[in-house]
Length: 133
Image 1 (cartoon, rainbow, N blue to C red):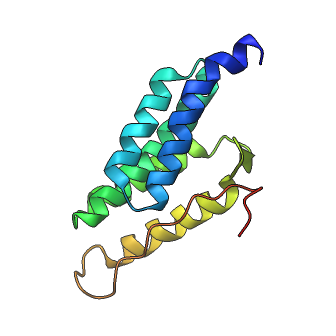
Image 2 (image 1 turned 180 degrees about the vertical axis):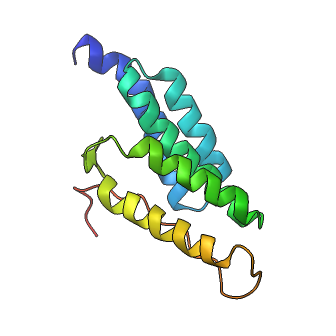
């Protein structure tokens, strides 16, 4: 393991923990893990990647609290932060995740002024491209 990989290892561990928590629906805890990854990363380019995942976590936490407008704002921010990254970044199926966040945001925007008109969309899953289904 070279020096860069050694420096990135703690951030990677926090990132993986954050993905696991997100996929379990533990969005506040996922946000905390992504914040830790941001603090530990030695690569400034990945700071905004982690921030995008953090904002997606916050969006879904807000949605669970019924704060639709706040959730939409955080989803839009997540998409802005994740936009510059390749469709496959850090092993994630990022293109699919961005698409799911966009769909979630669009659906929430439709229901925002009409409580109870339709159920909230479920949170997307974060998947790895080498993940076995």
